[in-house]
Length: 307
Length: 126
Image (cartoon, rainbow over all chains, first blue to last red; front, side):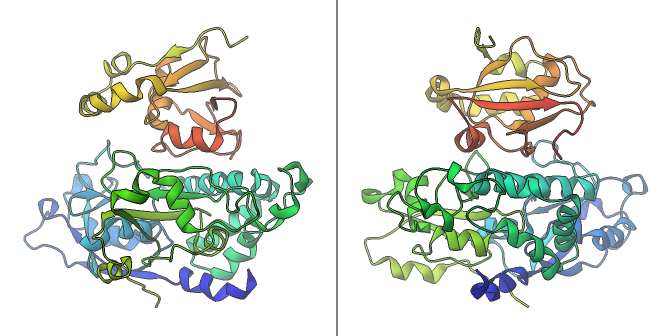
């Protein structure tokens, strides 16, 4: 794992330029306020980076709304604060250009579409819960539950304050494989091969325009014969209906890039997971012409934005 | 002992008092509903801490129902104020997000053909 530390850093440093603008109907002044520009970490969450945005716009709205909860939308679609920012952007696919134009609201909170976020503690408990869920899949929850409170804090503070070393000094334990949970690893299932693999790969697969927010399945990073399973294997299991004759292809975007289908799942999980320890994969199911699939990558919505 | 009866959470039962969103949803997915009718997922609701127990613990729910919906259902069943907190846990380890759907949790954490969810009125497992 150490050999690919550079990848972890690149992922950590991915940023997006965002242009925040107050919704025109909420302007309570003669002139609309200036937009507010920010470079935000892809791995962070909007409530952690928008204090200044709130301050900037709250002077320009109706006085009664100044204490109201701020929320954001893109193209009329409310943005879920509990998704990492990079995932929210990837979900927009090729609809979004840079800087990303996000609209700010203080009024008409869309109760049915997004969750309330009254304070940072809510983000923290959401983040920690998701991380524990990931560990339940990887290590039966044994690593997360054996950590001390201060280690949990270190993960959260590292993310909140954009401190790579602080975060990874604890997170690497969550990325260990084998008998890291304290108990005997042979309690798992059978052969010694599992030492190099997580039990399951924590991932969420988002298919835009689907009724359900995402699909999540228990998928093992290694096959029964000990072979590494790949992203392509995961897609086949998740989208059996797209396999073979249907002439459809599934394209996966995460962190603004399209990882090759032959990447082993274990490597993907260790290196391209978000800080909550999940892989957040945006899957576009697209029809393909009966041409070599290589040509399909030209319209890729990938934006790599490190620095 | 809890294996006696399996309750069915029916859409209309719940939607009476719930506003438009839920009703609309069932309207638009009525075709799908017929398909998934037989594949409901069995959940087992266990009280923990100071939470009152439910007489009926086993329920069959639509796989696409969200955790937030189940929390509301338990609150109604127990006659709790809607402002009261109710926390749900999987594996006694983590609290799933309110917008997570039952099917995802069942697939990943279900055991013996059902999904066990613990509920309590104060935060139990961090």
